[in-house]
Length: 160
Image (cartoon, rainbow, N blue to C red; front, side, top):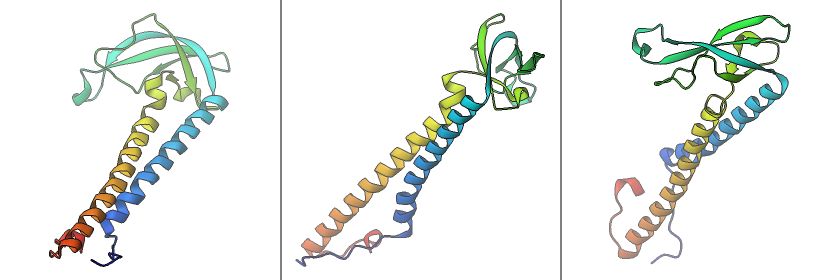
C-alpha cells in the first residue's frame, strides 16, 4: 500500500466547501445589518387596527395585520404588514412595538423575533449544515479512496 494516496478535489467538492462558509458570512452580514438598522432606526408603540386577507389570489387565506403608530414627526401612520400568517398572529387592538429603518417610517414593521431574525437564522443553519456536509463528505470520500487503494480494487468514477 502506498504511504500517500493522491486525493483530488472535484468541482462539486469545492462548491460545497465554499458554499457553506459563504452562507455563514451572508447570515452574519444580514444579522449585523438588521442590528444596525434597529439601532439607527426608530421604534414606537403601535396598535393593530385590522387583519385583512392578502390581495393576491394565492395568499387570500393569509391574514396581514395593519397597524397604527406615530412616526418621529408625530404623524399617525397606518401601515399594512408584509408578513401574513394563518391564523393571524395579532388581534385588533393588540399593542405592538413598531420598528423602522432610519428615516423611513413608511417601511415600518411589527417587531418580532420571526420578522426580524428569520432570514439570518435560516441562512445560518443552512450554512452550518452545508459546511458540515462538505467536511464530512470529504472525510468519507478520502477514507473510501484509501480503502480501495489498500485492497487494490479499481476506484469508482467519483473517486477519480
